[in-house]
Length: 377
Image (cartoon, rainbow, N blue to C red):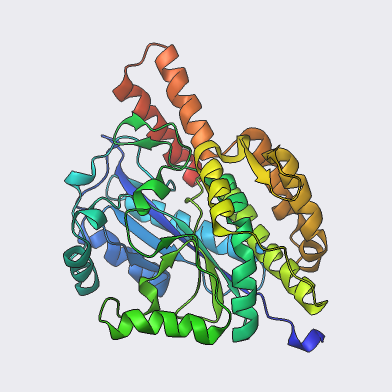
């Protein structure tokens, strides 16, 4: 049976916002030389995003989370060095604390021009960034089977990542406001369940045939079978400001995928719950992050997230040892204890206000910390 085990190789994509170091506001029109320099040094590992103030990076296929960490550190560092030459800096956060979406310009590329025409104001409001993690599962049937089961764990991963508590200068009351913005787009949110790869493909083909989408890359669920690679792509998470938080989530997603594969190998599977119930946990994770609680549907009660982390770690211990990433996975315990980027942003803002700063100064202090934490590895 061992020869049939998926490779479980991993890849991570992150989106960053480019800020002006002097004003701390977004760089609405970064110089072309910046992207050209990034592409010269990083080739296909870097690309522009829909908005010109954004930049996306992606690791190559990695066999270990240690390799993925090294690649992301190099990508973050390179983007920061090149941006710095232009008085700019990347921040790894899913929203900017005070920038206005109406002031942003979209990238002049055919794909993005088409998107702007199709989605109108909805896509122009997409001043948000995310982190996507790919895990390779080469067999189509296994990929769809694990895809259906992994939806249960998406809120648990989201809670560890939250980094978008502010929107246009306002404290939203949510740790991940990004998901509320993204929800305006079609084909987002929790994924559907499918009986087979064929049913999934027929579903996508129905929209392609109708001329609504070109291909499956326009399906933006929290988790999806990748249209380009034989992977499952986890998309629910915010961009993590701290690199080690990002790696913990990537490692945990990889281990959860293998844990479910082990169940399948033993003719078992994770208990199925309705999307209605999972959606409630998704909301709790979005609102409260890692310092809140999620519903344990088996117990029928809410459980504090630190306790859930311990249960997750026990579930995937065998897999973390298999991948030699126990330390990376156990970092989730520290996130649950100390909070996420969203918690730190709120704390910095509140301290600045308490120390006599006005709102503008307090929000700029948040940006300064995001700049520092993005490259603190």
